[in-house]
Image (cartoon, rainbow, N blue to C red; front, side):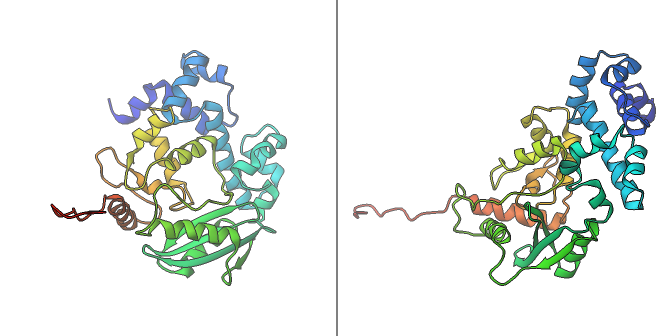
Length: 301
């Protein structure tokens, strides 16, 4: 049996395919009946496999379609129905979490959103930190400021970008302090500068993964499967990988500490070479320092 036939015979894959391609998302009961499983069993196994419930999966897919329609210039109403939502009210319930702003503003490329940003040097190259009035929206690493700024403009071309350098903005400075702490040989690993609020769009599952990543100690790594088990979703290693790939807060959400099951690095949004460099630095910084032993017969008091 080839891989495609195997997927067609897998009831969970058939359920996912229906959610990917159906014009309207079926109810849990309808979806379960179509693949010959009970609703409770489907709910439990689907969450274990993909990290989210069928309803959460369908909502995230529809929001991805909504974003595509809005970027094409469709009206909000047309985009809402083209993406398979039954009514605009359902969209606005989740717009802040999944779009980061109301749909009309997203359609205009973030028009009216003010983003403050700054850049600094780090051992991994240039680092860009950006924030809206609600919190930090991006921490990115790159080779030069121009490319980092171009990437910042891509998602919301209508936003107003303001560079802040002199004295730094309070939130931006807090993140730069955190970044500096990552590369300090004198840091106390138990004490880290406090962080301001963040303003990033994410699904409920992504939030759970990112929260788990913040508990991986510096100098250590976890596999995607280990992270999946840590959040109570042992079958969701692939979904964990997608959540790591969607992280926009370099170093703050330490997705660089997640590796493949065989210990190989895998990918990283900001480059595998930087990931390797960072992991080596963290491992070195956590090694116990050698101390001089007292000589026999001499007082150490």
